[in-house]
Image (tube, rainbow, N blue to C red; front, side, top):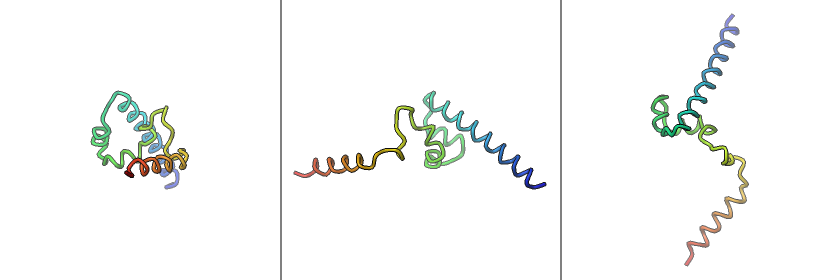
Length: 85
């Protein structure tokens, strides 16, 4: 049955992806450069950042998606006011 084979392939892919994430996190924890890891995976650096952004984020940093957008406006406003003579 093709459905069974597809299910098994999906499960194998999920397992492989989980192992890759663990290895990426381990390499980052040991100080590896993102470019070196991306090269080893044969992907671009931008693809690496997109796929492994959770591993790149430190535990003490909030997710960029969870930041309050009003805080970004305050920074923008302070930059504008600091540039005016």
